[in-house]
Image (cartoon, rainbow, N blue to C red):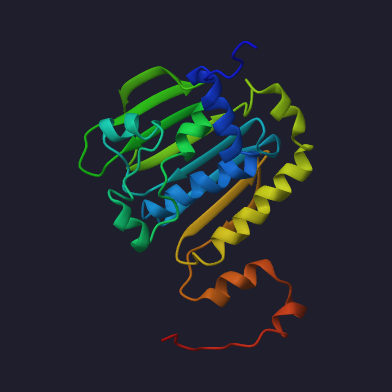
Length: 230
């Protein structure tokens, strides 16, 4: 009987792995917004079109990246969050595995613009199907802006699995609330199909952020509890 097990070509293996990390537009949304939070941004603007299937852009005023880091962030297992296995027990950031951007870049067209505070120019990178098409200096404000277009364009089976725009955007809204509520000290703006869905100023208290998501009747049912864990 002939041997039948073989190693997959790297580009096929990358697409399969990316499909496990990025399952739908809300996965992209989650990873990009968490990166902005980890970058110490206090303003995060999100633009979504077509339920996230056609376009997601996340722009922040965080620390930004150097040209070298901007290129490296699309490599698999490239991360600034951990250096040793010991670091796994002291993680304070949202992400640490270094898989998200590499996975997104394997299944979509991605444009990154980023600049650190002390740099004269920023960096623009356009990458599609994990191939860098453009890597050049650019004028841009401090922080990072990442746009993701045509998700799963090269994985038609995965693209066909996605639901309609309304359902996919509902998943994004769920992720938005999960991230925006606890991070009440960050200003968030969410736009879908050119319509402002949420515009949240930074506030000083958790309940002030929660109030945005509940009606007046529900507010009366909330009980404030304060405690300190040992």
